[in-house]
Amino acid sequence: MSAVEVLLVEDNLADVLLLEEALTMTELAWHLHPVHDGHQALAFLGREDEFTEAPLPDLILLDLNLPAMNGREVLEAITPDPRFAAIPLIIFTSSRGDRDLLRRFDLSPDCYVIKPNTFDDYIAILENMESVRLKGTCKNDA
Image 1 (cartoon, rainbow, N blue to C red):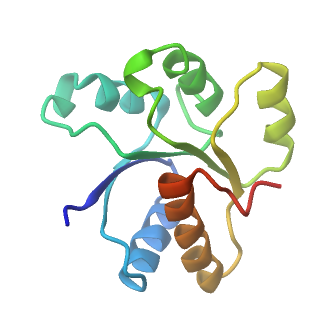
Image 2: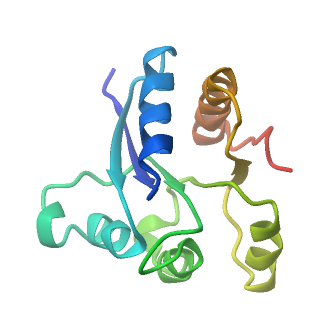
Protein backbone atom coordinates (compact mmCIF):
# COMPACT_ATOMS: atom_id res chain seq x y z
CA MET A 1 0.00 0.00 0.00
CA SER A 2 1.44 3.35 -0.98
CA ALA A 3 1.47 6.30 1.36
CA VAL A 4 -1.31 8.86 1.30
CA GLU A 5 0.12 12.16 0.07
CA VAL A 6 -1.03 14.96 2.37
CA LEU A 7 -0.48 18.65 1.67
CA LEU A 8 -0.24 20.37 5.05
CA VAL A 9 -0.58 24.14 4.78
CA GLU A 10 0.50 25.34 8.22
CA ASP A 11 2.76 28.19 9.30
CA ASN A 12 3.11 27.07 12.94
CA LEU A 13 6.11 24.75 13.16
CA ALA A 14 4.90 23.37 16.50
CA ASP A 15 1.66 22.17 14.89
CA VAL A 16 3.60 20.59 12.02
CA LEU A 17 5.86 18.76 14.47
CA LEU A 18 2.90 17.62 16.60
CA LEU A 19 1.14 16.21 13.55
CA GLU A 20 4.30 14.43 12.43
CA GLU A 21 4.80 12.96 15.90
CA ALA A 22 1.14 11.95 16.20
CA LEU A 23 1.40 10.17 12.85
CA THR A 24 4.13 7.95 14.28
CA MET A 25 1.63 6.81 16.94
CA THR A 26 -0.99 5.74 14.37
CA GLU A 27 -1.08 3.11 11.68
CA LEU A 28 -1.76 5.73 9.03
CA ALA A 29 0.54 5.59 6.04
CA TRP A 30 0.63 9.32 5.41
CA HIS A 31 3.41 11.33 3.86
CA LEU A 32 3.13 14.97 4.95
CA HIS A 33 4.23 17.74 2.63
CA PRO A 34 4.28 20.85 4.82
CA VAL A 35 4.21 24.30 3.27
CA HIS A 36 4.08 27.54 5.25
CA ASP A 37 1.75 29.89 3.40
CA GLY A 38 -0.91 30.11 0.76
CA HIS A 39 1.48 31.01 -2.04
CA GLN A 40 3.48 27.85 -1.38
CA ALA A 41 0.26 25.81 -1.26
CA LEU A 42 -0.77 27.03 -4.72
CA ALA A 43 2.74 26.45 -6.07
CA PHE A 44 2.67 22.89 -4.67
CA LEU A 45 -0.73 22.19 -6.22
CA GLY A 46 0.32 23.76 -9.53
CA ARG A 47 3.70 21.97 -9.44
CA GLU A 48 5.53 25.27 -9.81
CA ASP A 49 8.82 26.69 -8.54
CA GLU A 50 10.52 24.22 -6.17
CA PHE A 51 7.47 21.90 -6.30
CA THR A 52 7.74 20.72 -9.93
CA GLU A 53 8.03 17.10 -8.74
CA ALA A 54 5.31 17.38 -6.09
CA PRO A 55 2.66 14.67 -6.08
CA LEU A 56 -1.00 15.53 -6.41
CA PRO A 57 -2.18 15.28 -2.80
CA ASP A 58 -4.78 12.76 -1.66
CA LEU A 59 -5.80 15.14 1.15
CA ILE A 60 -5.28 18.82 1.98
CA LEU A 61 -5.04 20.09 5.57
CA LEU A 62 -5.36 23.86 5.49
CA ASP A 63 -4.90 26.37 8.27
CA LEU A 64 -6.82 29.58 7.64
CA ASN A 65 -4.57 32.03 9.46
CA LEU A 66 -1.51 32.08 7.23
CA PRO A 67 1.01 34.77 6.31
CA ALA A 68 1.15 36.32 2.84
CA MET A 69 -1.94 34.53 1.49
CA ASN A 70 -4.49 33.24 3.97
CA GLY A 71 -6.43 29.98 3.83
CA ARG A 72 -9.64 31.62 2.64
CA GLU A 73 -7.76 32.99 -0.37
CA VAL A 74 -6.35 29.52 -1.04
CA LEU A 75 -9.88 28.09 -0.93
CA GLU A 76 -11.11 30.78 -3.30
CA ALA A 77 -8.29 29.93 -5.72
CA ILE A 78 -8.67 26.14 -5.73
CA THR A 79 -12.44 25.68 -5.31
CA PRO A 80 -13.33 26.43 -8.96
CA ASP A 81 -10.42 24.34 -10.31
CA PRO A 82 -11.65 20.90 -11.43
CA ARG A 83 -8.17 19.40 -10.90
CA PHE A 84 -8.68 19.70 -7.15
CA ALA A 85 -12.41 19.02 -6.83
CA ALA A 86 -11.98 15.38 -5.78
CA ILE A 87 -9.31 16.08 -3.15
CA PRO A 88 -10.79 16.14 0.37
CA LEU A 89 -9.98 19.45 2.05
CA ILE A 90 -9.95 19.79 5.81
CA ILE A 91 -9.72 23.14 7.54
CA PHE A 92 -7.35 22.74 10.47
CA THR A 93 -7.53 25.91 12.53
CA SER A 94 -7.52 27.27 16.07
CA SER A 95 -10.61 29.43 15.64
CA ARG A 96 -14.28 28.44 15.60
CA GLY A 97 -15.13 31.91 14.26
CA ASP A 98 -13.43 31.17 10.94
CA ARG A 99 -16.25 28.78 10.07
CA ASP A 100 -18.74 31.67 9.82
CA LEU A 101 -16.33 33.58 7.60
CA LEU A 102 -16.16 30.64 5.19
CA ARG A 103 -19.95 30.44 5.05
CA ARG A 104 -20.17 34.13 4.18
CA PHE A 105 -17.88 33.54 1.22
CA ASP A 106 -19.76 30.33 0.27
CA LEU A 107 -16.64 28.22 0.73
CA SER A 108 -17.34 24.71 1.96
CA PRO A 109 -14.46 22.47 3.00
CA ASP A 110 -15.11 18.75 3.54
CA CYS A 111 -14.39 19.10 7.23
CA TYR A 112 -13.65 21.81 9.77
CA VAL A 113 -11.39 20.72 12.64
CA ILE A 114 -10.35 22.80 15.62
CA LYS A 115 -6.71 22.23 16.53
CA PRO A 116 -6.54 20.04 19.63
CA ASN A 117 -5.11 20.95 23.01
CA THR A 118 -3.52 17.59 23.86
CA PHE A 119 -1.29 15.16 22.05
CA ASP A 120 -3.86 12.34 22.43
CA ASP A 121 -6.42 14.58 20.73
CA TYR A 122 -4.03 15.01 17.79
CA ILE A 123 -4.01 11.23 17.32
CA ALA A 124 -7.82 11.05 17.45
CA ILE A 125 -8.13 13.91 14.96
CA LEU A 126 -5.73 12.23 12.53
CA GLU A 127 -7.86 9.09 12.61
CA ASN A 128 -10.96 11.23 11.97
CA MET A 129 -9.20 12.89 9.04
CA GLU A 130 -8.55 9.47 7.55
CA SER A 131 -12.29 8.81 7.82
CA VAL A 132 -12.96 12.03 5.92
CA ARG A 133 -10.54 10.96 3.22
CA LEU A 134 -12.03 7.48 2.86
CA LYS A 135 -15.71 7.97 3.62
CA GLY A 136 -16.41 11.69 3.54
CA THR A 137 -17.55 11.70 7.17
CA CYS A 138 -16.33 14.31 9.62
CA LYS A 139 -16.92 13.73 13.35
CA ASN A 140 -15.16 16.92 14.48
CA ASP A 141 -17.13 19.14 12.16
CA ALA A 142 -18.61 21.44 14.80
